[in-house]
Image (cartoon, rainbow, N blue to C red; front, side, top):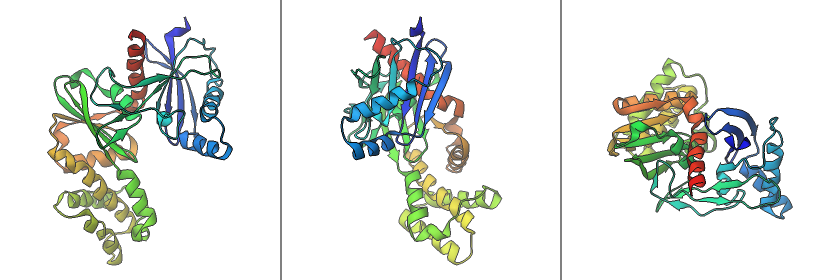
Length: 319
């Protein structure tokens, strides 16, 4: 039976990923990827107008048809991420907290259409009174494990807009967004500091500069003032532009993570890979948070959307 599969779609602002997944084993059978995130398609729609859903669904179909395996029309397609935003396939209302470790109360809408015969389900985001997420709610569903029961865990998902998602007794009760990555890009590319920073290898001097930035941010000083230290360090030849690059990174990551020192939790789970993992992990240690921090591997993070969508698929099948 083909229904032993489902199609996982993670549709972000800048990227698209579609995976054929075995429901029982969670094994990925095939992967289709594209740089056509929702922003690219939305801009195309602005130029041509017409029915936006048709444009998005036609693109979805072109990707679907790239699968080598023959797929039965009964195989469900679950879509999460920015596809449910104002610039996506269809804007859905945000669900509200709390939601359980199994995904109860997350809003899902079936997309009726004549373009793809497979049942399509679009997953909405979540809101609090002053914050929103789209996509990370599905990720965290896939990251929750048995050791998170009867405790309070903060999941850290670093990125352009870093997310701190708080799970208490197997229920997501709050989350916070930090514009860490975006602010770094804006400052390093569009302010007076742009000529004082330059990316480069993370060697001993750069590591020392990063640590200084994290420690500096933990002091009771305004970041509006400490940011200007990047400029003066360059003017006074105290740091190279590469060292300043990592000093700036330390200031901003430290500013984000110092909030954890006053967050009531038993465990911090750092869900990151590559360069971000190294920087965030170092900052966590410097802020004396290492003893209660667990590192989630890149492989587990990469598969978290699939596992989260599988939980929601079970909700659909039992509702």
